Length: 533
Image (cartoon, rainbow, N blue to C red; front, side):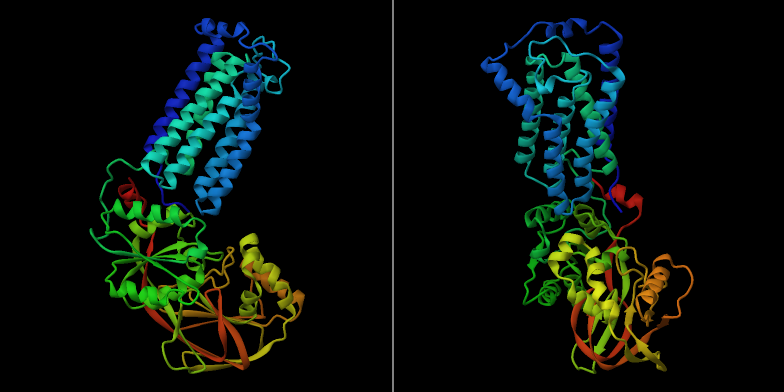
């Protein structure tokens, strides 16, 4: 999902490019109004074998549409790794779209190239109008500017990219003209088409082209002058500096104080940082990390009344996905700073009657099968395959031996024989759009339990099909609901909380903690428009 509104500036730019391209195409192809301009290409500008020809030919080859597109593909991959998903899609789609539209128009129009002594060059082939070189170089320049804007580079850097973009466009135009590869009208037409396609893509992807230097509207539901603590796992952030700049920009524009940066460590994954945020009187805590970081911080903030803004930075991102929060980093930061707080339940869990602070989780607790699955799936495989890594790791576990369990729901004992899968849940999805507990609601003060006892691969396949399609019932899968539950195993079993393996136990007592934490979620579209700059 996205929380961003369409940019008015992008809309105006797209409309201007559309009008300009339409008018220019009509004048260039349907009238002789620009014939005098095109006549400039009837005279050779460079001689074959000259130094100028060699330099221009090399420049044309370096800026070939395929080379520019591959560069944009790499830039898109760079932005995708930084969880700027809208920007990544826009960068790649701008280059590909500009190229494909140029190829289509060239085939439809079929305008021949101007006469040239250099017609043997690789970059001279094909029809002339519009220039693909110009369309791609304009797409590259505009997306580079959009990247510098989205990553919140300094004003000097954004200005530098603008100057570099204009310079690249001018040099490319001069190169195509000097090689007699295009007429002036072909060059301008290509530039206008590249601008049209790119501005259209940026508009639809809701990626802004203007740097955020204009005065913002300060209409926001959050209190002015508050303190925001940012707890983040640096290992999970692909580009910490981009993340920091985006957070500072969003908070500064809303009159927040300078954020309190609290970095987690392997030895201290979030509890101490959350305690410091409480002690410092934070009005909002933004958490950036994987499911483990989010769970630990959420557990530590339970009952504090401090709203939590989630920035998904892991593989599963279970809580964010179940609450419908954006996975794009820029969108997530916007929601964290400008959304509406929503109270959700947590589940308190005591293992083997241990004293001290109980565990708390927001999404699910799995005993046995899925805990072993989580432990088996290594981080490298998750980074490479995403949630599909769990499917690969699940194969060896399908033949796991069942264990005996005894279940109690709200004090009423229900004896159960053998089980392979035991999951207590507070939210419907376990990731990958798999709704294991479709009736779960984190705001109803109740929890759900799933107990599965498949025997053999065929039984696993049948149960998985029923879960994925949500059609019919499976006798090997039983469901329970209540405010308090307990599970007793016949032997110690590993368990996981919200996707992270925590330890082992044989007796698990769980109880709902209603409205324990408040999480920032997307507000209404009307509020988005008011909050957007």
